[in-house]
Length: 112
Image 1 (cartoon, rainbow, N blue to C red):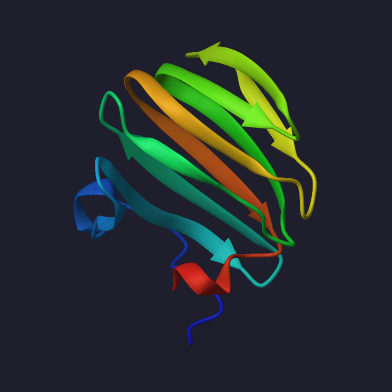
Image 2: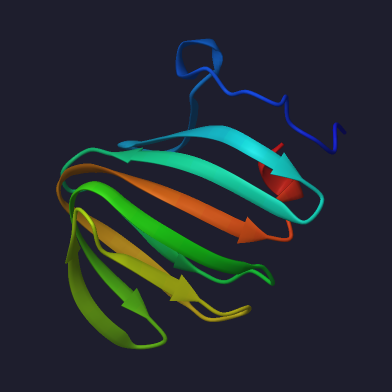
């Protein structure tokens, strides 16, 4: 497994993955300690509630999302963000098509 991304990430050169219906992701920059992932959602797509041992900070680049983190729900729009501590149950529903920019520490080896 490669443990470091290329120095530059050119969107048109990065393959989209399809992890779930209505959801696509591009793996952007990463090394062993950090990873940035762009995730595109269609309206109604569900980020199924899940946990992982990584710290996560996410920026809402576009769209509207209903987030649930640790039992608390909030609707977020472009310009908002959220933090998920390790092992915290979290998920989302896309209310308007949009893009999330996820960052993880350490990197999500399971995404590579």
